Length: 174
Image 1: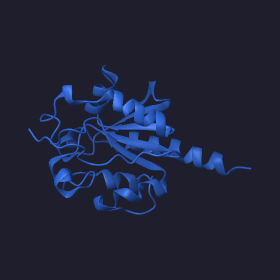
Image 2: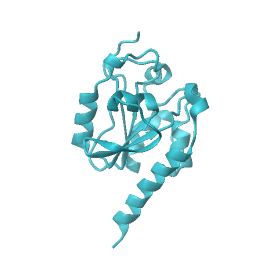
Image 3: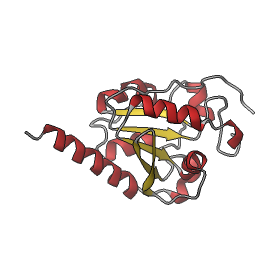
Image 4: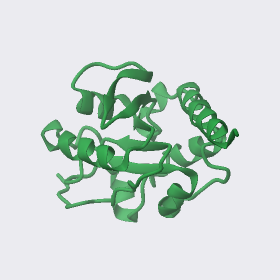
């Protein structure tokens, strides 16, 4: 077990289009001090390919995400490692809800079903959900972790990007 207080800082502030929430920082991310830093993780590529970011960022550039209306958090902030190494008792749903309510993003997107099930305490399918957390629309996306490669699909990520783009277009309309 890898006990660390506040492994990675939340990137939460008002005005975000979407906040991505993982289960916990992976071992490579915790060691690098950067979100989604594992060699097989495709998070940064997914952001770029779907148009959520106009440039391909490196994990160490995670603090730039608010420039693109994106925030980051994890369900567990007291441990790091694979989903099998992080216990559900370590999930802090109340902290997540409070952070999302304070930041008021349009959407909260879970990077993988495990994080979504932990927060919602029910089975989930990919895509938009009927529930809300802190007022934010909830999306469940296939995990970008290399360990979850067999479940990978870019389509739900693309749908999220299209919803975010529709907001941006609506905001810029007269």
